[in-house]
Amino acid sequence: MNPFAQASTAPLSPPRRPSARFMLAHPAHCIALGFGSGLSPVAPGTAGTLWAWLAFVVMAPWLTALQMGLLIAASLLVGSWACTVTARNMGVADPGSIVWDEVAAFWLILWLVTPAGFWGQLAAFVLFRFFDAVKFGPTAWADRHFKGFGWRGGFGIMLDDIAAAFCTLLVIAAWRFW
Image 1 (cartoon, rainbow, N blue to C red):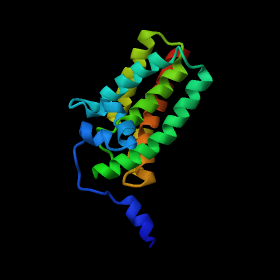
Image 2: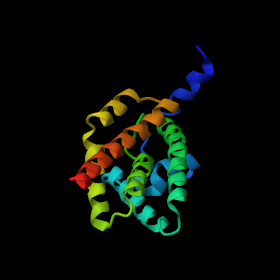
Image 3: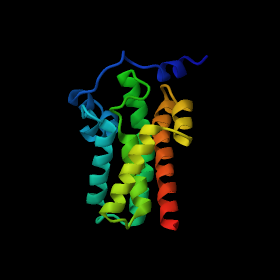
Image 4: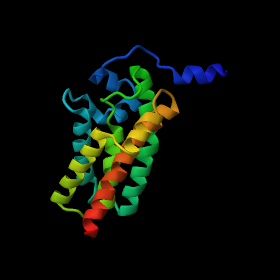
């Protein structure tokens, strides 16, 4: 067995609750904790999704559709790394305070449903939070099969929310079709 692989996949510390000091200790923590939205004591995933919505609304007038798509692609790659590092440093495979998965997934939804107005975006928000919380079908599969530390864990943290985004987009597409 490769000793380097073992060291990189094991948590560095016993489980810990994040704080502002923890978040600011490493750039990956700041990203993974959604620039502080994941520190919410109540429903951090919802807080992260609300932060994503606000950030998208602020960025949208300044970015072209291509630039937004590239930003989202980069956020998925960087997010996988940030979630890997942060989960390992927290000593928890998929802590609720890591919300970058919600951020990137909700940006993807908003980007693909644009030009949706407030009510369409609100419907997307509610659907996404439902699919992320309930975790059935592809979301449950991703959540079950990609747990742990190392790249697979960070990728898994991101993947179950991408699956929830896919389910959300499927419902929106079906609704628009009918």
